Length: 302
Figure (spheres, rainbow, N blue to C red):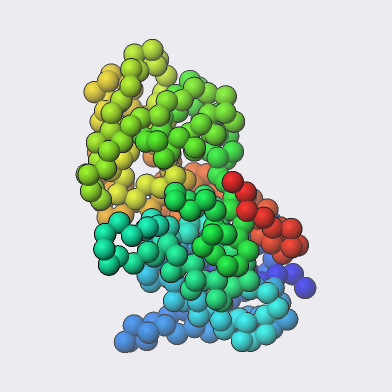
């Protein structure tokens, strides 16, 4: 029997595209809240004897995590033979050490919750910093997929003479890889973070790149503070309005509007998180990782 795919949270059309690529059946699940805000969950498609795939991107994770855990536990209780979580955006990767006395290291606590209820995980470009791989913090098999080739393809098709720009040293891995695939030049700026929303970015000599279209690339745009500061610095250096590309467009609060107000050319994201900036489809990429897990040939890639 084909696997059952249940969409708990996903960008418009992603579940349908993914089901088509997998040859999976789209199942029906009901999730709502009682008046006291507790979660009600019911499977209308029977998962007994089936491989179950739970599609749930984990931006704004506090309201999504409990339904995901309940769905996984209930599928297993109802007789599912395999339960996998597909989280295009994986939350709680930021707090990967105790910066101040008494803090919770949530990047190690959260994986314990998910790993208890699922057999495997598929995600795209998690924000690994001090953790070298997901296997350090997740006890279930995890497949990490990379959107770099998709971003490189988008740039090659849409921008005639790009200069790829990494806002900080952490972004160098993304920018250099995309630049290599797209065969374009790139530079990496220096960033100093003073707080959650206070960022300073320095710009190296860019005079020889003024005839290029700057393309700012980062893995996550949350407050968009880094991108905003980078746009302003590039503008002061005399460069043309940039294109901003994020793998994961979180865009918390008014971040998207604030970035637009800086005078950017366009803002692009993949559809790991539903947003109006989505223009790069990851359904084919996700299908590859899911099929690998279902066949038992999964593996985490660097």
